[in-house]
Length: 85
Image 1 (cartoon, one colour):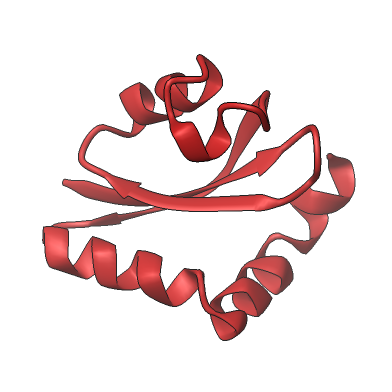
Image 2: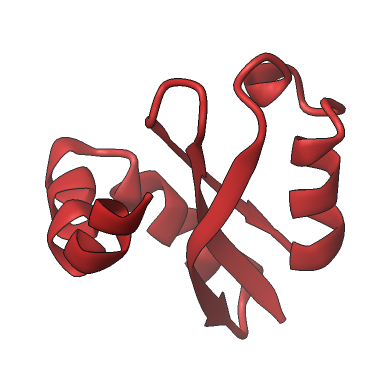
């Protein structure tokens, strides 16, 4: 199983979108500062994920969610969650 996930930074409120085969481990790595792109943006909160059976599907979905349309989809999808943060 592969996962596409979205984290939100407490520092700047921005999204970080990624894909992985081990979601729990990857979120932990982000919060421990082991991921260069988010090391200064923690703590990060997991606010969304999708599961895919195929690795290529997960990485294709990640790429889409990083586009303008994908970010708009996420903001609409997570409207209530983002208001609580």
